[in-house]
Image (cartoon, rainbow, N blue to C red; front, top):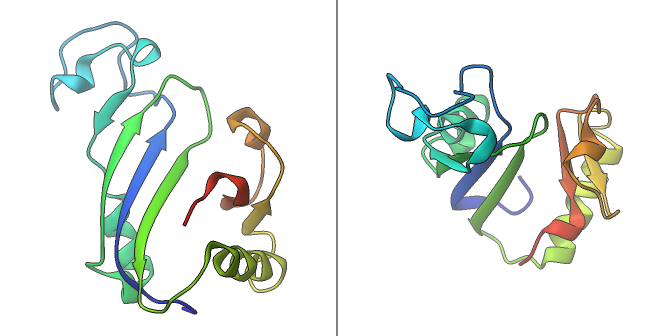
Length: 137
């Protein structure tokens, strides 16, 4: 809300799911979907960008997206690249997200500045965690 989003690209990086193949085999969806999940990074389509527009109507039609399935057992990542309506530095964005994580979205949105990796987030009860060290502007 503070900066406004004109448009953006949302790339999701997902762990292996139960529907993926353990070894190469046929897939009803597409060729890539039939490849062995534990040995490949598999590009895929995603409905995540459209889903965001349904949950946050102000973003409806402003995001597009793609996905990658990766050989990890848990935790996903979203890489969001946006063009903002209002000028902001990365420091401005981090401060706004940190403030929300400590107030209105406490327990839902996390904020970290430590050097963490995916397994450090397994079991975390929050819906989303902003990794301040992983972003750029």
